[in-house]
Every structure is written in C-alpha cells, then in structure tokens.
Image (cartoon, rainbow, N blue to C red; front, top):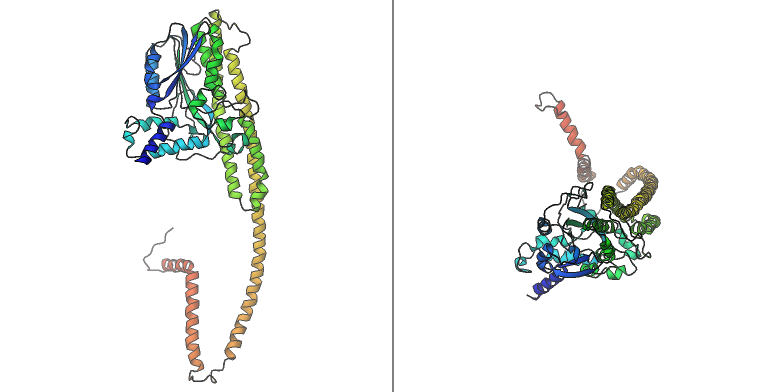
Length: 500
C-alpha cells in the first residue's frame, strides 16, 4: 500500500537498518599520519581484527545504543586479544571499558519524528517484513532514541549499572527551549561505552548524538540528521577529537598514547554541551537565568488572570530540569575525582618509561581532568543558587495566593452577613405576608364555588406539611440515620451490639 511504502521509507531515513549504519574509523600513525574512513556496520568485523602496518592506534566509533547488539560488538572486540596484565584505570573501575553519560542538544521536531515513526512501525502487523525482515529489529532500533532528562540516569559510571527502559511516548516539555538561543531544541542524555585493547584499538559505542559545541547557527544546524553532526567538528566533540589529537602520535609509547587518548575523549564529552569554541552562546547554566527572571516577572500576571496553576507548573518543570542537570554534574564530578587518581598513575608510569609530551603547550592527562572538573564544579555550584531563587519565588507565589484567598474569605464573610440580614428581614415579614394574604381572601364572595375555609386548610395545610417534612428528611437524612441507629443500639433488648 502507498501509505505503508511511505512509512517504510521514512523509517529507513529516521531509523536506518543496523547493517547500513556508518561506522567511523580513524587511524593514527607514530609519524603523525592520520586517516579517517567510514564503513557500514555489516563490514566492521575485519576492521576490528587487523589494521595497516603504519597504524599505531585505531579508533572505531559505532553509532549503536544500549542493547544486545552493542554488547555483542563489544564482546567480539574484547575477545580478539587477551586482557593485559596492567589495568591503568583502577580507581574508576574502568578495567577495559567505561560507561559514561553525555549530554547533547537535539532538534525537538526531528527527535519527535523519530519517536513517532518508532511508535508507528514497531506496532505494525507487518513489522517482521520491514527492513531486511528481522523480527527483532525494533528491539535494537529503540536504542537510537536518546533518553530525556526526566527518564533517569542510564549509568552509574562506577558499577556500569545500565538500565534499558523503553522510550517515552511523547517528548517532555523543557523550559530551556524558551531561551532564544535554545528555541526548538531538546537537551537529552546519551550513554557512551568506551573499550580498548592493548594492541592499539579503541572502541566507542553510543546512539547517534546531536550538537556538543554551542554556536550561533546551532538552531538551524540542529535540524540536520545526527550522522551529519558527527562528521563536522563545529558540532561534534567526537569529530573535533579526531582532528585535534594527532599531536599524541609524537609519544613513543603506544600504551601511554592510548591512555591519554581515552582521557581526552572522556573529558571532552563529559563537559558537553559547551560553548568554548564559540563564546556567543550562553552555557546551559547561564541560559536558565533569563528564564527564571521571566518566570518571576509573570507572578502578578498569573495571579491577576487566574493562571496560577500553569505558572506553578512551569516553576516545577524548571526546578526538575535544574535538579536533573545538577545530579548529572554530581555524578560526573565523582567520576572525574576517581579518574584524576588514575591519571596521576598514568603520568608516573609515563615518567618511568621516560615518556613525555614533546609539545609543552599541549595539556597532560591531569590538566585535562582538572579543566573538566573546574568547568563542572562551576556548574554544580551555580545550579543550586538558581534553584534556590526559583523556590523562593515559588514560595512568594504561594504566599500571595494565600493572602488573596484570605481577602476573598473576608469579602465572602461580609457578603454572608448581608445575606443573613436580608434573610432575617424575610423571616420576619413572611408570617405577616401569609396572614395578610389569608385574611384578605374572600371565599364567600367567589362566584360558582361552595368551598369553605375548612376545605382550604385541608388542602393547603396537608400540602405544606408534606413539603416541609420531605425537605427536612432530605436535608438532615444523615443526622436522622445516625440518631435512629444510636437509639436502636442504646435500647435494651434490641439485639444490636455497639460498634466501638
């Protein structure tokens, strides 16, 4: 059917088949030579096992998220060569691999399209015939979708406590997107797995990522597919690392080369997204300040136009975002504190091997970790201040709303007193009106009637008693029921035991 064909075509574009995913391979030689190629995932096996003679280090990045496919690729990669005796990353419990979480910027509409096509095609009856006819396709492709801020942390960084929750049906609302520089974007979290082998291979696996480097054209460029971002150093931290780390090939020791290379990857990704390269885009922590000011300016307007619920909801949403980012920063800082100990061990090992960086202007491993720690520490310290300002403003809203409710209560009490006065006057004049109307009637003078005053009281009196009795019973039925039940319990010989 045409609709199904269009849906399949859109699915191939937004969620491509696994065998057609493009894997980036970057080779580094001791002489400073560097080459980069891209191959389909279906042809990755030969590149995991061997490399050209001039290549000292091969870095392979596979755009595959959490799942059995990622685990299978990593197992194949690690089992090709036995584990070395020396484990350089002891304090971080990295062993031969790390699990870290990377924040990045994605276009909201593109991500929503991915989520919609996943929900549409994964539940279709013909999904077994879609894309190479693999019935388990949707069990692997859902890992292409990044996790939102509110969907929980995906890794503990220390014990590799990875969780694989299904993606949410809809994208969450973020107050960060109200900033002009972040309009139409979504801050998401991607797990990244880093593994290595002592024979000069490094493997990184993560879902397709968005923008790591904040820049002036970010809003337009964020709409591009993630595969395009990964190939441009202006957007992708991975591509920037590939281009900037050729100087490490000056190191004579392959082991030191690999260790410093991995530290550079970790520290570059763990501080993203950032605006170091552009400077015209506010950092995420700074972008929340005008948002908070805008929310505070809406307090009188929200109370005046009865928009308090919507305003409070935005306050809570902003507090949740800041809290989640703050929690991620806390985990990153804990990880970096452990990594610093390992980096000092790496530097001591390099000194023992008489290995040093020939270019003094380049940063050492400890310098990189110190830089990343300082940047994250600044964010970690500032976010609670913004959150405190929000909470204080929220308390002011509640106080103003309480004062407004008290004023309304005073006004209602004044109105009730006026109504009570009218009620008392009505009660006083009601009998007078009744008797004046009754004694003003002239039944004897009514033409063609033989009814007497006795007949009037028999009809009107009976109707009055019935209406008043029904009103009393209906209005006080609960009290009457309790009174009757209590009287029955207290009556001797009733057979009903008290219920205490």
